Amino acid sequence: MKLICTSCGENVVGQEEFVKFKCPACGEVEVIRCKKCKKMSNPYKCSACGFEGP
Image (tube, rainbow, N blue to C red):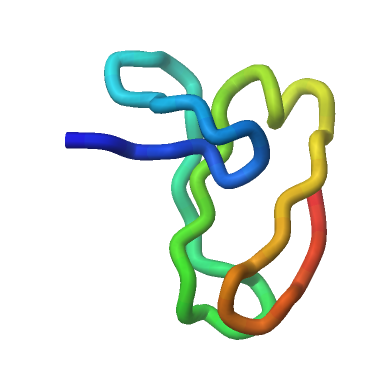
């Protein structure tokens, strides 16, 4: 099973403190963020609606 960070592309399976949530704009795409990208506020982009955020 793979869970890939939307920001950096790293597989987060087995990592602690990653998050998984629906896009806050469209609610269609699941956004996954690793601990490092969350902490550094690295940007992510929704593949469905183009919403960008940290």
